[in-house]
Image (cartoon, rainbow, N blue to C red; front, side):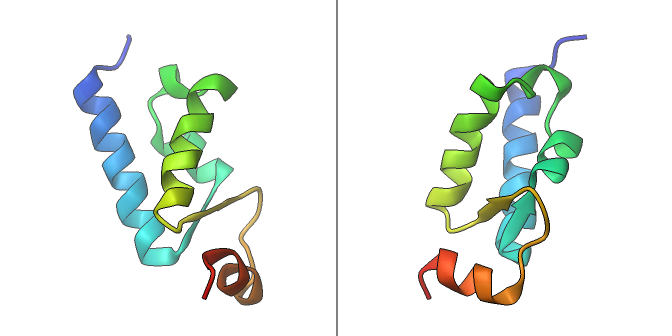
Length: 74
C-alpha cells in the first residue's frame, strides 16, 4: 500500500524530533521510520539535506561525541 503525503510529513516530523533530541540519526533509523515507498536513494537524499540543514548529523553508524561537535559547527 502506498503511503500518503500526510504519512510522509508525519514520518519527517518524527525524524526531526528524534534527530533534534539526539543530535544525529543513522541511515538504519531513516529506513525504519520512513514509509517504505520513500526508501530509494533519490527520495532519501532531499530528506538527508533537510535534516543536515537542521544540524542533525546523518551517519552510517552512531557518531562519537567529537564528530557531533565538529559536524554541528559548535
